[in-house]
Length: 418
Image 1 (cartoon, one colour):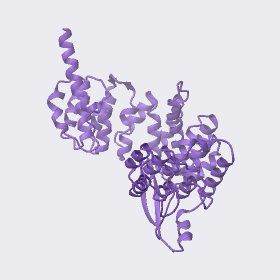
Image 2 (cartoon, one colour):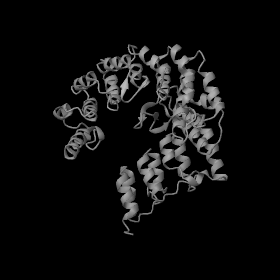
Image 3 (cartoon, rainbow, N blue to C red):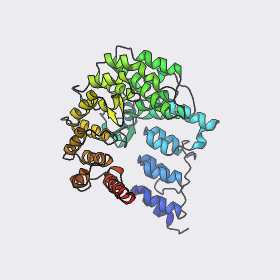
Image 4 (cartoon, helix red, strand yellow):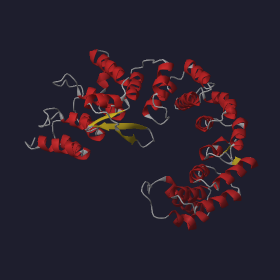
């Protein structure tokens, strides 16, 4: 190995250049190279910087997150201390799940950390009164946690999320009430702490958890009903991923709850849950919410309607056409996406899709053109230009953007066959 390679690795880690770190490791750099300014492995610098991509690259390249450091900690323990569940997961080695002292140390450490108040801990460490600065860290699917900074030190508030995920991986059955209590410390269904509690319970797929969540769904506190609905939705989704689902029909049990629910946040989750089944019951609920004041509720309606991909009842079709012209762009977008999978041949459906090719959102316009193409409506060809130059986030190879090409190919094949 080139004698300058350790220095180059240290510099790449300091710059946060994960791509360069991977290149150097593939070229033979030592993943446990020490940072000359601290004497600690470069993995510790990446962890101190909360640099998940670099830390992950180092661990995947062979860095040892369980290496004992002079102060008695390990890189993994330091990552857990920082409170970023994503960083801790990125450097967590599977070997740490094996029974033994290392696993017990991690569990004990995670349990202790789950009880701390990050801002109070920052005040204790810095001796400063605060308040701490707060920034939200969000992933691609909308889950988030907070990063708190005070006096140059940083802590995140995801310690309990990591503990819950660790217990789930170890197949430890944490009591329902304890997971609920953790979730309520961060009462937002998109916070990592709430999400991990909900996912851990939903993955159990047993009658005990189902019954506890159902009971909680009758509580007068809407926050508790929200958690219950979230757990039940997670259960239905986890069940659907099994080779032989057994619970989806039980979603019918929540039709009366959805009919009486007046809290919008809870109703939003319940309607999402009910989209996993179809029938007269959900059809009635869908039609009852076409004019709901909250766009999140209106956007569920098409997926609740009783029918199949080739036909809707007249009332259902009227509801979809109304919502396709909804004043809210999110509702129009979701309805247009639904229409791209609907194969009904009603002229009104094609006409409303033509209208949607004028929508303010490029994604909606793309799905409107795609829906016309899937129906083999020849207007899709002349309307394709309305999609416009691709905006950031739009993939030129995505199926909606290729739909017209497939439509034309089908036409050519039919002509050749004829």
